[in-house]
Length: 151
Ligand code: MN
Image (cartoon, rainbow, N blue to C red):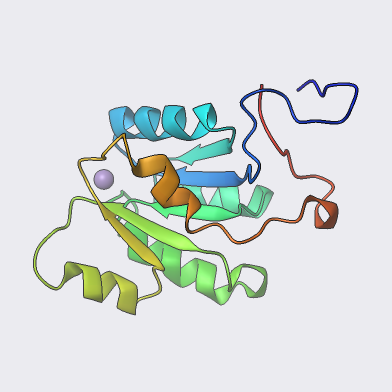
């Protein structure tokens, strides 16, 4: 990461650059989401199973969690339960990215702790901006360890 002398973020660094954890067991979807978000200047962490997701959350608290509902090891519900039981993560925004699109799925997911719901296939034109709408106002001064942007 290189900063310009005047302190401006590097080119490609979003003003609201965030640390985003992607939990998705489909490699192609994970790569697609990774590319969309890193191109917008976000730092992306990745996990493919419930266990990997919980380990990633032990290591670093993200600003946002994108959670596939159908993942090995207990499903997205298992991740949600664990996250909501951790005091430091109680307010972490969690957005479902899922192919579950039956009537009632959206309401069910919002009812168990998801803040948002995006259905697959991912619309690459709108995905990044939609995800960013779930970010709170990040304050870099409060987290010296936060990587504000990637280069
Ligand atoms: Mn899946």
